Image 1 (cartoon, helix red, strand yellow):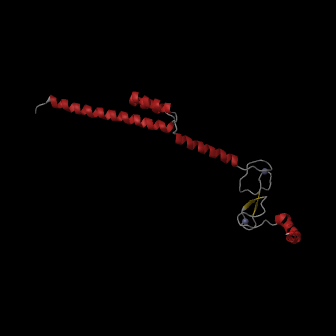
Image 2 (tube, helix red, strand yellow; image 1 turned 180 degrees about the vertical axis):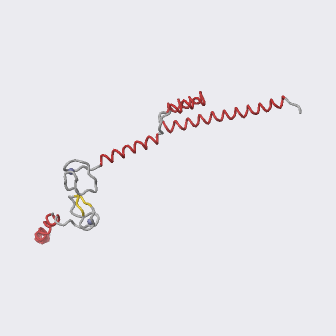
Image 3 (cartoon, rainbow, N blue to C red; image 1 turned 90 degrees about the vertical axis):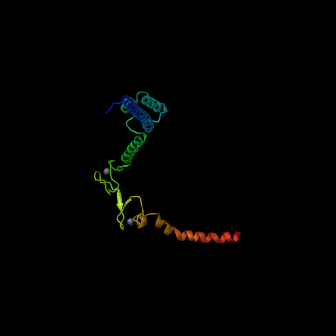
Length: 178
Ligand SMILES: [Zn+2]
Ligand SMILES: [Zn+2]
């Protein structure tokens, strides 16, 4: 078996060619990846250019440096975090306070456990909780007993015959004027 140095040379050349091509592809891939990644994490175009140039110049070590220095969260993650924080703050602000003692109360409480101020009332028919000021249940339409008798409804009933009489008196006048 004869050993041909020319064959070995060709083999080495092919190997080097493949290796070179692979390294070039890897280099381009790293640059593209870095560029995509920094776009997700930063809005500043200057930062995009700097990160990409860093990887173009330094290649793998550049990627390592980039991984250490890049912003921890992507813009979308940052946005989600802000939303969550806002929702949390909103939840704290939205918590109702007792009008009597200004302690936090829950929406489904009828009476403040601390100062025993009446907070809500229950509908007699469906039992759902209503604001104290409501005269009618918004869930089932049942009027609140006691409130209606004293409320404007009775005034209307009393006033209506007089109004009708007034209307009846006015209408013929209008007719006669025409
Ligand atoms: Zn209270
Ligand atoms: Zn009801």
